[in-house]
Amino acid sequence: MSHNNWNASLYDQKYAFVFEKGKGLIPLLDPQLGESILDLGCGTGHLTKTIAESGARVIGIDSSAQMIETARATYPELEFLIADARDFSFNDPFDAIFSNATLHWVRPPESVVRRISASLKAGGRFVAEFGGKGNVSTIITAVQQSMGELTHTRVDFGWYFLSMGEYASLLEQHSLAVKSAMLFERPTPLEDGEMGLRNWIHMFGDRIFQNVPDAVRQQVLERTEEKARPHLFRDDQWFADYVRLRISHIKSDRIPLTIHPTSVIIRPEILSAILFVYSEVHRRRGKRGNEHASSHQNICHHHLHRHILRNLIGGARNNNELGARMWQYLAILPRSNHSWRDYSLRDD
Image 1 (cartoon, rainbow, N blue to C red):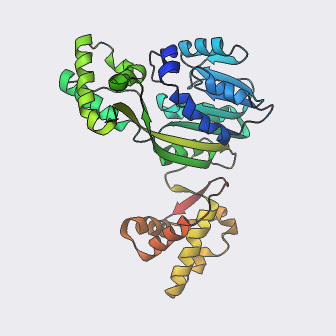
Image 2 (image 1 turned 135 degrees about the vertical axis):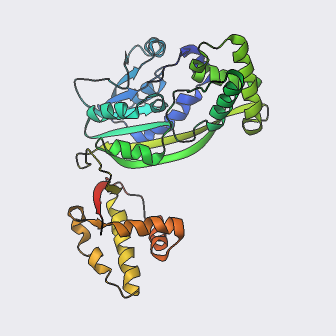
């Protein structure tokens, strides 16, 4: 897990947007009276308190002693514990696990996903938002280039930003079925005017300057600002180029524990659409497409031929008729709350 030297007081004063934006997750969590909920990476406890106001029984955990100390002082009526996201455990499973702005700090991601799955009841909910692929990429690039030019070293912030597909696949390998997932940009204004970017780096990325002399540190920050200014500074204010991944999953025993390399995850209604379009296109061509589309009510017990999927992917890449029509049909499908299932592929 990536560790940072947190200043809990400064975090609350200058970076309240972290938990303020996280309030948008609460309706997705939909906490109910009497439910047991874990706030994973609770920070200074503000969202833990918001969840508790629903009547749910909430426990907040964080690996930072400074954050937990502040949370306990601010909300003494709630329970907060120092715990590592990679190896926490409780005697009883939770109805839901909530996490905001935490999971991109945890490496390897498999470790926290394993604990989340083990700590949820069957049918339990996992709702989270964190940095997704491309998060603060302009800032990271500017810092890495500046550090490389001035110290001839490459720095690693310790963050881990996965794509929506990568994280969905990882979660489903641990019996967490996708309800919804969204990757979106959220450019966020930073306080303190000209000092906004370097203060942000000090708060969230201070670990990269360990063993770097103060004079060199200042040079790195100045050069970073020069590189990032054309992209992130406007109207006398710095912006952080946040990209967030927001997900909602349910623990389901119907999701396989292991997804083999020869498998693909397809929602039932999407599979039906693929087979329908495949049948229609081949029927017009005079081919027996219905052979592959028949009796798909029990398709989970059958095999989906590899060339159907090949045509689907090919439609995106090469605009062939079959693939293109599949994508056109899939685009108008309503969102589904059904769990995804695993359908094996075989060679012809």
